[in-house]
Image (cartoon, rainbow, N blue to C red; front, side, top):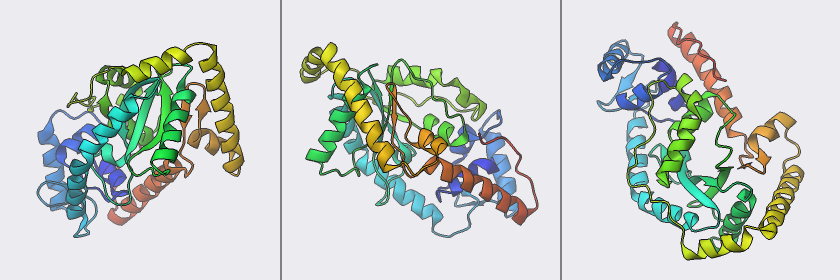
Length: 302
């Protein structure tokens, strides 16, 4: 449970007992076990609470920061569903999930509205290119409410990066279009249970039903043949070559993780956020153990 709090402390984000239960890496029988453990840690001065949220951070404003971020998230969620509906109208989009901070019910001036998109096989790069062109032309390249940086196709639903960062991002995805495909994706990545054995997939909660507007159907009919195949391969090669030139200073293994590009996947995380979080988490654990003279366990992070 302390490891969960330490991970989210990297983002200055206190947690509820329910959130701790879902993301602890050890099977827990019930909520009472979590609240008892938290009460003991609060009494020992190791964990701090405002009565609803828990944190290893004693900063007085951290709890209000979460509340403000939660209110902001609630205020923009309607817009997120509208954007998801817009994204779903593009050719070859098959499912849309909110990811990043908003999927964890947090939003502020520094965060974006991130979307994780599942596409038709062999048309991922057509789909991605159309969405990126829309963002550049009609949104003036603003990603604040339209950040589409991770695509996979429906035949390659398995995520290979099995670490606590990726597991956290996967279990907190918020399905907003085509819930059934989201469930298939979640179940395909059953490895997350090795990190979070108490976690369950997100509930339906008003996700838009899978449907195909006539504009999407017409465009797909035009691109289902050789023209679409040629365009997909062309967009794939052009984009990958551009990224290699732009981010070629990254070590090969980092480029492979941050900018993974196949016909079946497009990942655009040039800042290497995953590497930085995992390194910061290991450092935070060491500092916490030294500060309190206790061990929080050694579950592998990768």
